[in-house]
Image (tube, rainbow, N blue to C red):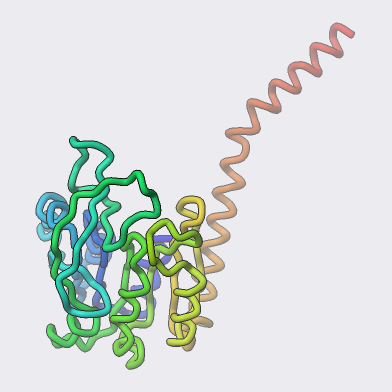
Length: 254
């Protein structure tokens, strides 16, 4: 799915990527790897511990990294960092502006400055086409709500989005609500994977571009199907060999 997204950024000649919930900023690093000089990648990591220990390293690859949360407004918000025990790392990738729907979860908290996609683009005077990569642990809808102006002027036409079909976090919007809102804004899903149970990565594109993506999506699913078919013999071969061995023994020794 990630490779399909990166291919589409080239096909649509997108020069700017905003990776939101960046962690190690791998999507930004990949976006810049093609040596296209006009490209810029902005990686946003709200967790200050993750930003300082992990995300900042991406600057060596040309990524412009920011210790900022991306939401639907400019404010200072409390971030929740799940802690399994006292020795848990503060750089975990499951930090969120929402609490999980598990009463047993304990947290370390911190205060984080936030902005919106619209405000960031305006502040940087960015006029080029922008793709979004959004992995924000249940907080996807506020990110979208802070991107309405950029979507309306067709500046944001491609979004890679991690969504959940089950509410793992309190007050989170699930896939159906997010899809409905994006459809209202003129963006439609073209491909998805299944990362975990009830969790998907989905690519959305502007309605006027959807038809153009068909060859890429078809090729992606053909490869996915071929991969699945090729992986079957690895598992089935041993089962079949045992069955055939049993059958042969029965034929030799009826």
